[in-house]
Image 1: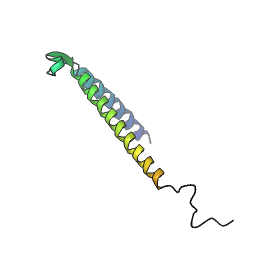
Image 2: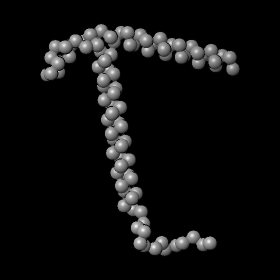
Image 3: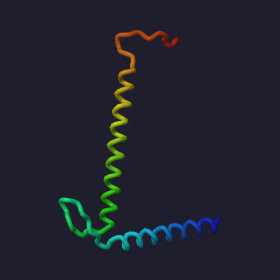
Image 4: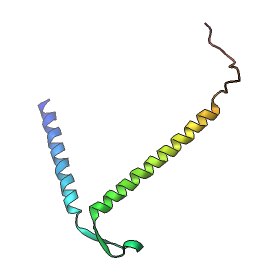
Length: 91
């Protein structure tokens, strides 16, 4: 039991150290060549974060659109109030 706990703590510490190294190593400015920002120097970590946020936004919108379509499809398949059901529950 104690060995498993020690291994978890070591794994968490190692993960945190690697994450800190990753952030510090990617703060160096890089040149980006986007037409509006031609020749600007921006830290690579900010580019990585922007790409991550854009990916999250795209996933959010796709999930929202798919959910809206499913909801609309379920609503269309629902039984209208005026029609009777073939089998009613016995009381």
